[in-house]
Length: 431
Ligand SMILES: CC(C)(COP(=O)(O)OP(=O)(O)OC[C@H]1O[C@@H](n2cnc3c(N)ncnc32)[C@H](O)[C@@H]1OP(=O)(O)O)[C@@H](O)C(=O)NCCC(=O)NCCS
Image 1: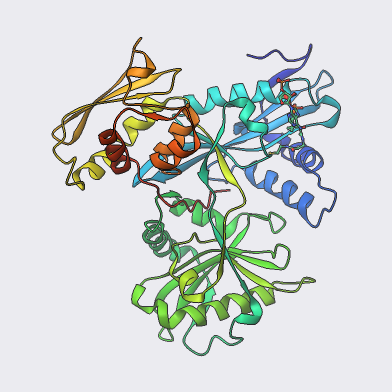
Image 2: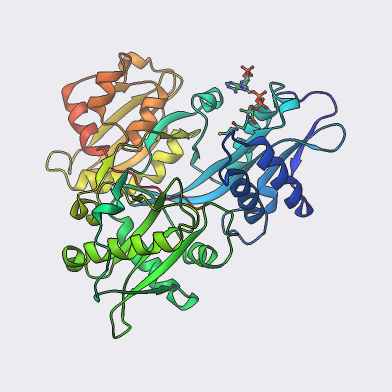
């Protein structure tokens, strides 16, 4: 492990440290224009330390303690499940990385990152993901390898003021959790990369987060006048810069999108106005990905995500093994490769894999040992390979961007297009 300064120690957080960590994080992550940000960091830390969060235990916070026993640096590892091409993968999301100003540039975060990678691997996480400070996490082996959810904005002036009498919305209750979880799963199938939200997570979101926690959401169940549930909406409790952030809108019957899309937007705008407090509601931000029906039907201006996920994949073979069902499914759907037998040699210069197929199915994923990269079917930088595996970039895009992405022959290129097509990502991570 990277050395810590003398008399500094690295350990897990303790159950009685919630307040200290919340105060530390609020100070370490302070912004010049606060606008509720410190309160958000403070309350979010307390919620994560509460022992109630389905993806976070108290000892998922790591702490570097200074010689006087104070917190010098910390981060937290969140345990999540993401779905990639229909396969559910264990994922570690690293958050709230911060060092006290007096202890910066002494290698504390470097030591924490090494420890968190060790713990994350021990939990079976196939990916580590971070959303954060530009460039910084590249130093710890991360690459921008996945798109963030695209957002579409609608000015409230463009939305009807009254939802009409077609829709009732009421606060979601415990007894709605199965309905919400199942319907959210149907919606998640629109995109190739999503974060799984379990029933337990929805239950946590309904009850636990403190109001100051900016990740706190409200869930409303949509009803017909005979009280049958026809869908649900989920949005942040607080406005962000005059915008109500919409996280989920789902209908049981997809044929009703065309007639209910405008009333739904009116319902959401009304809820935003009610929650605006001292702010003025200016926009609905539809954080639903580019494939959501309401985005297309409303004509909302889609914004390209200004940011991407940092991703780290320490064990490419394990990821590929997990993705095997998706590879078999894609091969089975291809006229050209459904009965293919042979080997595909993947190489990233510091390692490589030989993947064997028989009659259109993957039969073995083995390391390439001492075989020159030049003899591989495809050789590319490892970060580019991650982009390919996650469907962030196609093989054609990677070849166009990276001179050191080399595809041995045209038929391999066609096969890679089949195995690793681009896929849309709409990750609403469990926070
Ligand atoms: C960014 C921050 C977490 C770095 O913590 P730290 O304990 O000083 O980091 P380390 O000393 O372990 O530095 C690790 C590496 O990053 C480099 N580094 C440190 N701060 C950096 C910065 N602000 N920008 C770029 N590189 C930085 C170091 O030089 C070191 O590289 P080296 O090992 O090659 O010398 C800390 O400055 C901080 O808490 N900032 C405010 C909160 C924040 O921005 N958190 C990140 C949110 S995503």
